Length: 352
Image (cartoon, rainbow, N blue to C red):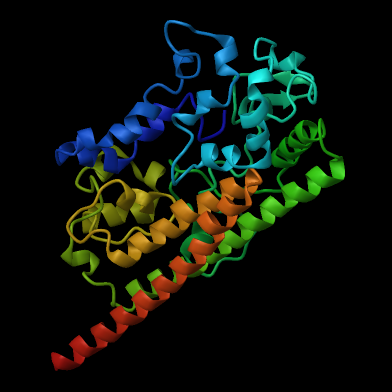
């Protein structure tokens, strides 16, 4: 199936340590925003709503909007405001949604593609109920292998077996997936145009992950030099730290991470993709800090907004929701790091 996907959506929602920690701390009902999408994504009535169960309804882009929107995956916003989406908004009432996708005649039944037409297309004219089967960049959060990193992202996934490995954009599997994307695009566009645009999406993502790497290096250097305040030893531990090493063996966590949980009981910083996103879902006492939250917004929000805007050819989302705020957040991270270093040096001098 590939991850993320609809089938494992509930698993992805609840397996993370911050979900159980939120329940333990009495914040479970605050997870409604996650639960209402993740709990039923594998069921038919998510797209073909109850009491009607219409195939035609499930073929309309509006069927996707309930979940596929928001700051970490603005599919609705980016598709809806793109040229494709605007044409659909103006002419969609004339589309023949009773016709199976495999029988749709592009340019006649649909003048512009829908979410379903692009994402449920498998290959060679076949459509299936697996909208992630052509996923190359996945959700956009997993670092690619095809970059040289300056931060600890070079070691991602740090020996942990339960989070995805780096993406090889040019692997045999992904090259095949790209060819299937080109099949879809070529139903309306030239092969050259489609290939050039999809390559530009890759370059956007390489650029975004390069900026994330630079930001992670700033935060990691701050931690290594002892200027993160409060330090990891003086704040709440990583979510569910008192039980992780009891539930997961070194084979799953990797020896270094397992030993860190066992000896430090979660009193160590976890920064960046993917486990560092806990701060978006559970705020604890001084954990994460302001600069860590800045970095979370950079790689988890603005990176993904730029990804979706570029993928769906919505220029405003690509730039003003993506690339521009990534750069601005990086500047904030640099400024915050400089402030913490300055205050840390002053405090060290005053204590002498």
